[in-house]
Each structure stands twice: as C-alpha cells, then as structure tokens.
Length: 406
View 1 (cartoon, rainbow, N blue to C red):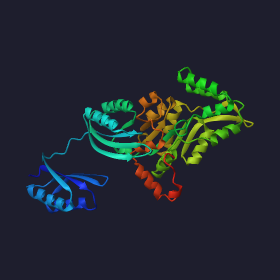
View 2: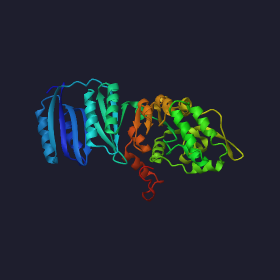
View 3: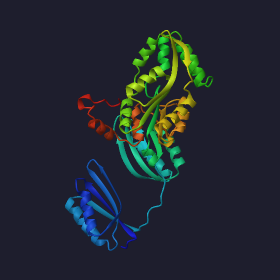
View 4: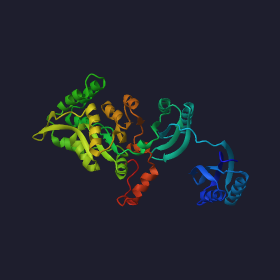
C-alpha cells in the first residue's frame, strides 16, 4: 500500500474512556498518518471512523488493530480506499428539522428529498428532545435552490419545520436579534386587547380585516384603530401592559442569547407603553414602537411622531445593527406578519414565527411550533447546552428552575 492510498478503519461497540486513544496508539507505532477522523456515540454505542495513510503494507496494521479490538471487546472493519485524493470542495448546508412530534416517516421523506437533489448527508446531530424534537443535518453537494424548494414542499406535506442555512462562518457569528412583539414575543395583538377594554373590538377587527384584504395600508389601518380608542383611561392601557403574556420559550431565548453576548432588540407596530416595559423587564438593549398621545390621563385617539410600519422596521434593524457595530450579515430578525417582511428579508437570517403564508414564503426559514426558544436550535444551540448553562448560573437552582417553554 503506497502513500497515495488510504485505509478506512471503522470501529463499533460499547463506548468507554480510552478507546480512541488505544487505536491511535497502534497507528502511531505503525507510523500511520491520520487523514480524517470522526466519532459518534449514541446511548453508549460508539462508531469511530479513521482514514489513514500507512505508506506501506497494510497487513501489519490490520493485524495489530484487530488484536487491539479483540482486547477491548469491540469490532473493527477495514476498507482500502484506493488512490487518496482530497474530495472536491462541495457547498455545504445545515438542514434543521423540527417537529412535535417528529415521526420516522417525516425524517424518511426529508432525507429522501435531500438525496433526490444530489446532496449527501455527512453528519446528523440531535439538538433537542423537548419541548420539540429537532435534528441538525450537515449536507454537502446538490443544488442549494432546489434543496430549499424541495424541502419546503416536503416540510409542509409532513407538517414539520425544515430550515436550510449555508454552513459557513456567518451562521456562528450572529450577534444581533430583532424581534417583533405582537404574536411573536408576546401572545396576541395588543391593539385587540385594548379594543376589548374600550368596547370597540368588533370595529377594530373590521379595520384589521380591511387591511389584510389590501384595502388599507398599515399606517391607515393603525390610525383608524387608534382613533377608536379615544377617551380610554390610561389605566386600561397599564392594565393590558401589566397582563401581557410572553410567548412560551421567550425568557429562555432571551436568557440564552444574552449569555452568548447577543444584542437584543424589539420593534413593534404596537405601542411604547408595552415595549418600554418589555425592554426593562427582559433587560433588552433596544426597543422601538408607536407612541400613543395621552392628555389628562386619557388617550386622544392620535399618535405622536412617525409610525413604525413595515419600512420603518427594516430601517430600525439597520439602525440597531449600526449602533451595536454589527454587520447585517450577523443579524437575525423574527416576525409573523406582512409588516415584518422587509425586516426579515434584510436581516442575515429572517425567521417567520407562526407566520402568515406570505411571510413564510419570503423568510429564510420558518418555525410553526409554539415555542420561541426553538429559534435557538436554528442557531445550532442544543437543549443540553441551554440546560447546562442554566445549571451553572447561580441565579438558577434546581428548586427555582424555569419550566420548559418559559
């Protein structure tokens, strides 16, 4: 066996400390050169693959490695690869699969689609078991556009979420996240809650329907709805603010990203009475929303200053990024409505969260499970890493642990 050939060594069996070291010691004694190595352990079962160049006869290596495998109670297999050349560089992507539940049939369908595009799965890692099941696949080759399109179709058919992202430095370098508020960071729409207090819920719903039908733009519809709140006591505004319900997983998302050094911001077509409190409560870095005019303790039905609409949200993303010194390629935007579209498409990664179909189609990826912290899995962060960080934080003890989904 000359230096241009290689031997693939595959070790399988029950894992224990020292196995990898034992085989590497045999190879070192033989003067072997390790060209590639990868190891996976699932429930104490090891699969270790090593591609080596021996520079001579392979039979002594096979004999020595087989003897060591017998001593250690594991199996070893060999395959001569032939003339060894570095594989051509293929474009690689991370494919993240999320489901609740995530059935074997769904995984089979997704992996079949990947193969049909000409791509190959190089590695599979589990990201979480709960509150959703998620896996990350490292995929190489194939046509990226077809990969995204085909997996989006299959994800819809299987009723799961699938995200496709380039496997490059930018994925690991995300540093700013900008979140929409209504139906993203918090449950429900604030203006509908206010309208219920003002006794004009039906009228506000009617204006919202006209806006969704394209009869009114966002600013028109917002001003019409705010006008219906004229005369409302500011105490009702404070009541709604104090009873906002965070989306499940919101605190976990914020807590984890802050530990990683992210800059966190919220932008809202809603109101500063709500976003200012959320910014303080969650220790966020930036917040922007519309300002309701108040006179003598009551709403006037008017807004103060420019409206935070679809275009303004995208501009605010850029403004926050500039303030934080973060390139747009290292930003993440999350939202659910048409008002978020420009922001989602301008960010380095745009995530549609339980969004309208038009938003799902435009965003880089979509999440339809009800947990906001599922976004962490799209960034390659595992549930085990989140829990380990909580366990190491003196503010979180076993007795005061935050429930799943918080």
